[in-house]
Image: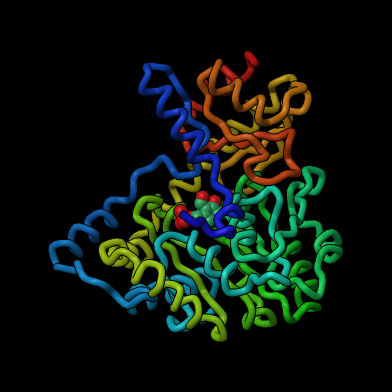
Length: 385
Ligand SMILES: Cc1ncc(COP(=O)(O)O)c(C=O)c1O
């Protein structure tokens, strides 16, 4: 049997493998604290569950338009306006099964053999995987601890070439929890304006988990890049709906139809029940979203202090998402060795930095989508390493 060569370019998300290993150890009776997984530990809010039940009893069981039902795309447009005071036509909004397909589609549409795509390192592992699958060259933009893991504008300018077709930006960032403020985003836009042929994919999926009363500096605000900007967003993190598989994105007019064609070819349409639930999520009461973000901030403060109280660990202060990304180089172990030891000997599931890029051998990612008690227990165990 022949297997396409392209398949060997695909990589994976090792957080899923770590979750499987942690679950296996747990089923064998081991006491495991899981700080490996990147999903909120809260249930989907009740009003959204009710809307899904209603969608089932109302008989919304058939295919929907491939780009998502119009009332949902209108609700997204309204949500964008309410949050950012920007008008985006529902015709530019695409609903997909989770945010992930947007990365796939952007890479397929903008990647080619002779093209280069810039992605954050460390960053969500699917970026590099999808770029390589598209045939384009994956060019890492190293995010440095000394820059608070923010984009270094000079470094970015150095790696843009005439072959660059797409730059991927992720703010707030997975895995570091770094958050770039408006000032930095303005500088980024100034640079991007110099390269009008380069498209931008802005992954803003953690836009509602931002600390210290900061607000989201969305790239949607910038008219100058509107015709080459893709926004990746969704319900997974904001509304604790990772398993519902529902994401929204905004596409430039010029390539919207290609993205929609990929939807028809790939999955026909997003899940119909999830789409009706998604309308309620956006239009219903938002108190739960605020409450969850506050809870993550409390945990962030807790984990940040606890980690830095350990002798051989130092951790930079996260500004968003729900991850801490400590430097463990003083343990004289690599992140992989540290994470293996943490799980196998101490019952704490965490992810090595190298799962997110080649530049972060000395780091591990801890997800604080877990209770304060469990976080405390985990840090106590890590202190024994
Ligand atoms: C940065 C980032 N982008 C995209 C996604 C994909 O989200 P979804 O589950 O909606 O596909 C994730 C999920 O972990 C993520 O961390």
